[in-house]
Image (cartoon, rainbow, N blue to C red):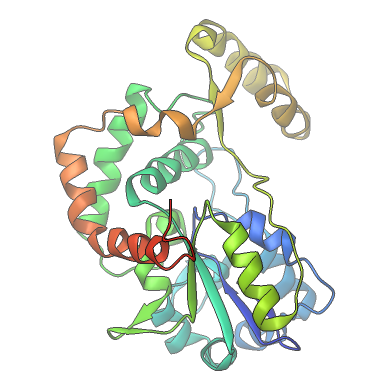
Length: 292
């Protein structure tokens, strides 16, 4: 989430929906974290750190960056559904519910689910850079689907990226967030902000997941061995963007549509995220040109 009180702008960060790109575009001096700081009982600087820290540790078995809330347990404050914000973060809820220009981004559910799987495998399973069609992805999809089917709703930090998108924009059957835009149409968001608030920004997609090309699979085991056994964590962190930006890698998103997750997982996604599918179609239909 990001709050610009002087302009009445409140951005709700739906996990795996271009949040990093929007956050960076809204990285302005007028952004305020006072409400979050008051709700969490921390200094403003710490609230800003919590709101901006997106990355989880790459070591398996470690808790993600976040906050130990006395009622909710270990949470990531910027990835809380509206119901939890209303019940546990009153000042944040007041700012959000009264902001005249609140907005969120939305994404087709299956692609978002796959993106969340890839992030989970890296951050909690130590999988490193793998392809979306790796058998491990399908296995993890089955485990995650089973967990989600038994937890509704939830705010667990480890599964935050799988939360329904509707839980971040709707509450008690009513739309709380004023506007919703598809992740691929940040131009429409920029135009909306300009027209309504006078804020002129560009929102480039700066956080695209990369995966090894099929022919590069052979070098993955050796590269993983070197990284884990011979390099320190700071060195691995510094080398990772260089490694994934090389010719061995390609954009993962382009292959998501062909990944076989199995009929049971696909049926689960269709049912569990039916509201998200409707939300995404609504956002597309609301574009000036009727969507892509």
